[in-house]
Image (cartoon, rainbow, N blue to C red):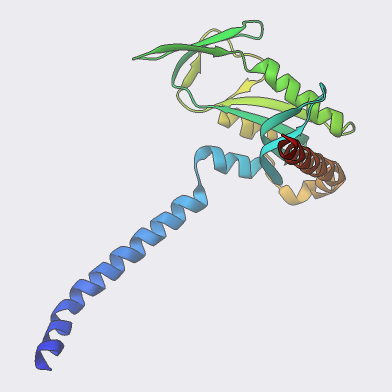
Length: 201
């Protein structure tokens, strides 16, 4: 029995250190999670509610996916995020945009026409609410030849759609909420239709 007591007494400091280390890791994790990434933090700041990966009916009788749809004090906002590093060459009229970084060069289709389609699809459902769209380039992307119309940075997104006092615009949000519910129902209807189509196949 003395051996057991001795081993407990000698290992107690190690257990205490391990418990403190575990508590420190947990606190850091909670702090990181609550602050979120810069993108998450700003999307949470500017939105009152948010959908991710939403599928809704489109004008051409099909469906269209919306990456992020936010309910803001200015209406509904569609966000498409681009995480590229380097110099971006793109304009409203260019069909393809090019990214040049230190180690590579690549092109991608101008994302603005697809965003216009998403805006049109949302407007078709909520006709009396302002609907906007932005393509957000994260830190690391630089436009040296001018910035296309629907493109912005996280800081610009916060500046344009942020609200310093969310309580002050509560009445606006309540006015938008029935339209927000229309989007929710349209998304559910599109999801049910997609499931039924799969079953038929």
